[in-house]
Length: 113
Length: 113
Image (cartoon, rainbow over all chains, first blue to last red; front, side):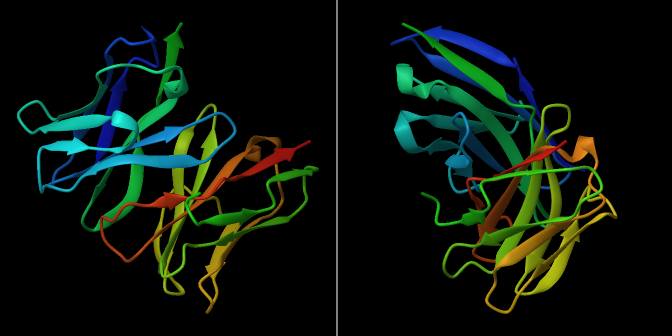
């Protein structure tokens, strides 16, 4: 079975501050990990993906995530928050033979001006 | 714009009714996935089709069914609707079977009254 846990359903950061959204995974086989962003009343947009090629993954809009097998983590970071980053962020996992995306419960990111 | 289209955008219907949601995948994508997003259940995988054939089933009720047509568009049929079926329904597509990134449509918001 595969699963992801997102710590913190709500995170608030000041504009210009570091963004850190946490995701831990559980998978019995090597996982493929994804971060998606959902803006209000919109669909999910792929931010970045980890597919074992490199542990540090760079995505769109200045986001990146680091895969740490020892910690079973795939935390999402951005050095400097922008007002336009306010959205809900979902971590998700897929593995071979189980190709449905299993999502975490999401983290709502608020940016304080 | 992900390239995945869904119609209609909004649907309001009464309990006991039947509705059909439509999805057109990105050009060239063979896999189509359906997900349900609700406040209490979060994002849940419903069903996957690959090149016209059912590939995987998730938490899909027996009142719900889907199919993928030869032109690769897909339809999700929801019948005997209940208040609890009110949710956002997303379609996603990927290039092939396997742990590939999935691209999401804008969703159909279903309200059952």
